Image (cartoon, rainbow over all chains, first blue to last red; front, side):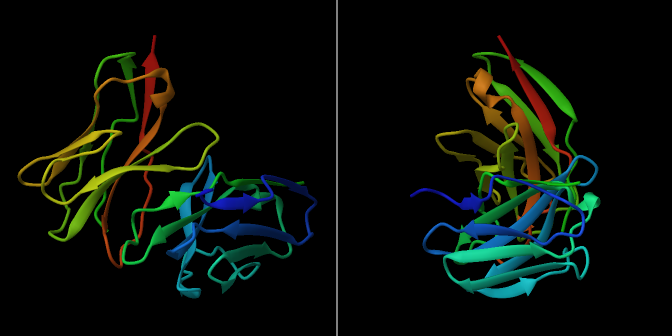
Length: 114
Length: 110
């Protein structure tokens, strides 16, 4: 298996622009998670899905952030409009059915908002 | 979710065992102990988890005290590639979330 795939690996954009991050989970995994990592706040859970349905989005910082999972093999995290404080590494992870905690992480997307 | 306490950093000589401690005195009966690590510029990597019994896999061993208030992750023969931040997390296996703390930065030295 190729593992969790994220794209792009690096994204540089200007403040106010829309940013879309993409994730393909491991086949057969029913849970998908989006995390954000910064030096100041460490690794934070933003939202997670079970069987394509958002279960807990309490970590989403504000309305500028939205996440979707249209099917079992694809998810997006969108930031509109982006701000410099959104600069971070965004990780996607997936886990097997019934196992919320044994997660496999992707390589991350490093986002820089100028 | 229960909180964990880990030393911020540790050193280990290459080839020796690395023993990483974790305190989780408020762990509840159904919470598991999970260990992840994050090598620089990579995503976190699952290592091992356990509930009550000691566990071993190809990567590491997990020793959980009888009262479950602390645990130790053991890398039996540390290599330079084991240099990473190691996170100890307690969580329910079903319905729980991973809350990453600050972890222990392990430096394996030649």
